[in-house]
Image (cartoon, rainbow, N blue to C red):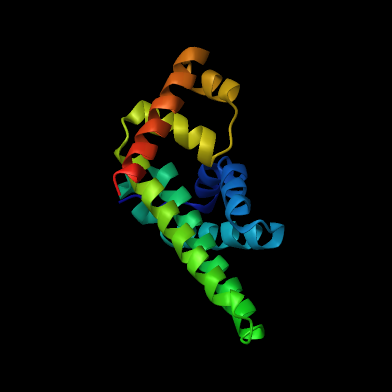
Length: 165
């Protein structure tokens, strides 16, 4: 097992930081909390850097870590808010809505993992990382029609999986 030095680690992770921040901000809707979430994940990744060579899809693994950290932060923020407003009956509704949203996000992520690799790649780049279709075309060397078709098929599959419930 090779030991990864800080410079190599930072070089590997730095290029994905904007995508990680975008994901965190999309979940938390707060700049400071999103930055904290990404920093927490960065620290955890550094601590586990030598175990990362066993991870097949590092990018998806890191995205999942950020998502999970954001959900933990969101839950903590919600609990703090609920404690301040104990008498407020809307808190229970908000908490159940939050739990339902977490369940939906988890289910979507699990469904995405089952997609064919080209559909998984395109939907991850577009819907999770926030890349444009044009950026995806250039990064994957796929045609515009192919990108649109893969996105459409992936979204249809996800919708169908939800409809089966």
